[in-house]
Image (cartoon, rainbow, N blue to C red; front, top):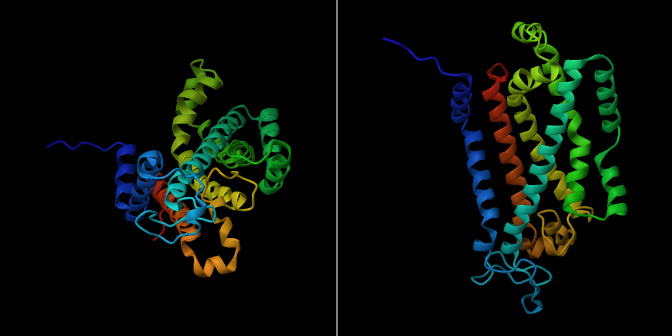
Length: 287
């Protein structure tokens, strides 16, 4: 009787599927993503269409989640806002992780002056709060989703960089890497063939958790008027009406849907990130 050894990838997938919270988070994020992509089909209304005759109407058959202070359909704005908030979080996280992975691999593999330059650059970036950078660039370039992606990526690459640098310093001492170098493989070749495949699972975990942070940060900045500009909707700027205590108490349909969307999406992303971490490195699982 022969037994087949499962690959590390299949074992990680099996561990992830056993994590019920991570699986539930993945299902929820898939549903949110599909809903956002299908916004033109499911919204039922133009998210930016102003109808003063429908001023702050409560939920009804005509408007499933009611209307806002400009008579715009809250449900339509909610699903279209999901596109913006998810896109900002995903794009900025991908850009930050890609840049951090590249610089971290170069720093770890080349060492010396390259390592010192990259790590000092990371220290400089970490010394500037993202909020201050956003305020400055919002004044220079104007608020917007593109500006947020640029700032988030520029301010968050050191996290992935430090993770990849530490892993690369360990990997470059392994026997198979030393053998590749002895057979004439250049450092860039070693990075592409050996380092990147080994660090990608860990980078994916860091990137997933970063998505949750950036979605939440985008919501905060848009709420403050430093992010996505109206009339374009994001979950953050949909909460603007929540600054009024009377509206919070009497018209929950204006702020509760975007608030729940932010909270549940961030929670689901964190569940998926925790599940990926435990699947990739089971030694980190806590009892």
